[in-house]
Amino acid sequence: RIVKQRDTDWEEDTERGLDIIATRAEGLSRFMEAYARLARLPPPVLAEAEIGGIVRRVAALEVRVPVHLKEGPDVELQIDHAQIEQLLINALKNAAEAALETGGEVHVRWELVRNFVEVHILDEGAGIANPSNLFVPFFTTKPGGTGIGLVLCRQVAENHGGAFTLTNREDRAGCETVLRLPVFTAGI
Image 1 (cartoon, one colour):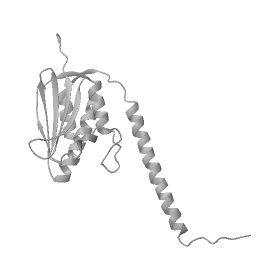
Image 2: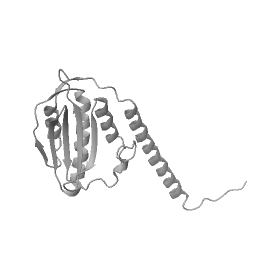
Image 3: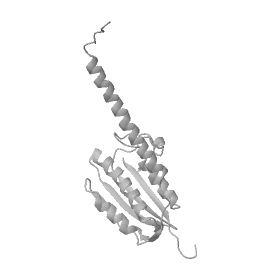
């Protein structure tokens, strides 16, 4: 029988290899969970809701940075309250994280523009270095991010007949998120 002697660093190599496998498995698991969430977004269940109440509640949830709220008009919409609230939570969370990096603040307002309500979230973060990948599913620059948050926001807005945009601010450093939702009234 031939007995082969192991290299002295075989345990370190094995441990490193297992760590790599564990990291990849964790990443694949996060990817699969994110894909499943994206693939099964239910259609909105519409009910009447006042947008100001939703915006106020979401703004009150963020306590890491100052959030300045400018009240808009009371407007009733036919929306899926839970989906719109989650969209705004995600958008405000992103704005707060950006503002945290620079010591900035967040400003939130809503307004009526023709037959649409627009909710604006403005942060005083660094801005977007590469805006072309913002809505690419599974692309992320955040450690531990899934890359589906903005994609889901856009999908929720579009499923409501609206739009969701994120752009660099023109007046200063930072970003502006805009959720635009249609106002359905009699005769329109």
